Picture 1 (cartoon, helix red, strand yellow):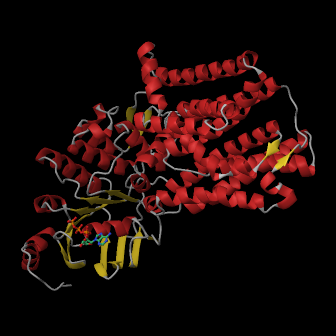
Picture 2 (cartoon, helix red, strand yellow):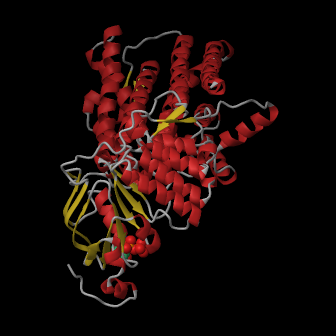
Picture 3 (cartoon, protein in one colour):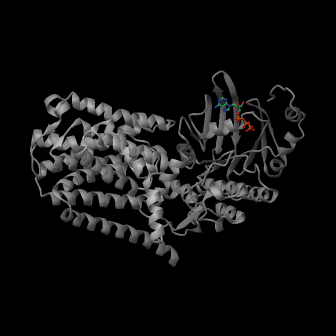
Length: 597
Ligand SMILES: Nc1ncnc2c1ncn2[C@@H]1O[C@H](COP(=O)(O)OP(=O)(O)OP(=O)(O)O)[C@@H](O)[C@H]1O
């Protein structure tokens, strides 16, 4: 316990130390810089804050956004428009800031809603964010005298503070937002962000509301970018369409890539260095500077594809070996409030499927499938390859999959619900091919699985991971409880299978869908899984639907068996009935048969 609290304190100490050093540098810098450089750096500090938000979105969550410049422009124009047309003073300044942040947040929410609806591809989100600054600059162009059209607005009254005060304002804003972002990406919520970047589909099937989280992050980063834009305009006393342009949005991405995507500090230093150099070179070498910047960009992309930060970080650690503030050691604890097995309604079967069909164009993969999964029962689904077993699982766990028919979970129709909505109804699903997060640790994966029940802490890391007993049993039996700090990519196949099952149980489902959970496992490993499944139906009343090719395993643990053949139910009965059926034998022997009801 002492180590754990030490690790957490270390992280906050590192954050506080970094923040204080940053504030000290900001406090001292204006005394060391000349007026020209201070002027340039004030603007650059505001831009670097926006780049930091790009790194959060792109580096941590995987959203390739071209649109951060739009939010920067919204904040800048809120300042220019209010000060030019309405008035100037502390009240107007606050109103302008609130307007910029408010409009930025609303536009971000609308953009996020459009970009991240269920089933949209990442490319689609990038195109939407690319369109946003283009649309916004057209709005500015068509605004006539009000927005200043292509010339923008300039000369409006503003705070003509001493340059040092502006530098401190911009620098403090950057340091404080970066410290908060640093703590965020290292918190439990930061793990959720990385998990979304790594495997969005698996997150959804753990009940994590991926789209909502992306929209929230988009709004938060838009708020920061809008505030930075407001500061930039108030300082520079001029706003122009270029501030909202997609060219600037693309530059933000380039700076992020050069600095080192996902490293937070790398992109900030890249922004500070490149923008300052550009401003300086554009004065001294007006015709050559863009060429120089282009050459540097190409050289870095070729020689350092991960950007500058990993290189500089490696050198720094060699010269000055310091202990990094890694994740704290986690401990597993039994969840005393676990509702595993208590979610089902006695009056209604946990799973009811009626006349389900699935077509891919003219290919009919499932036809008129009707079946019921009961509490405390393990229903085996067998059938030859291509019979439609996995498709059936997909149709139960994702409302957008089926072409017709009805699926009810604990009496509630799933409708067109996304996987996370269906997890909320009580469905847990494991996949045919193990589907985990290779760069996350075992503990991180288990914490992710608890998101639906426990949520994720925003700026802190949890130490104890509370899990239902059966999940703990699997972890102990497979030795995973001793490997909590290991990355899942380094685990054996059997351990990965065990971890995936423990994760699904951690979501506390009442209907468990397992697609060949024992494929590739050794006999002792299969026995462990079989025992746990038996306990889940017997002691916890779960309804388990299990796809298996290993008929011996199915015989050992199933209560009833459904045989699928060419997308239809060929037979349903007890294990003995099915195993002794001539019809089933001929299907497995490859003979053509008519589905019998
Ligand atoms: N996205 C898709 N587009 C077109 N056809 C598909 C698609 N997904 C599955 N199918 C087809 O649907 C049929 C059933 O596939 P499914 O994976 O459900 O079978 P299965 O019974 O799980 O097989 P296996 O035991 O080999 O996993 C197959 O003929 C497959 O080619």
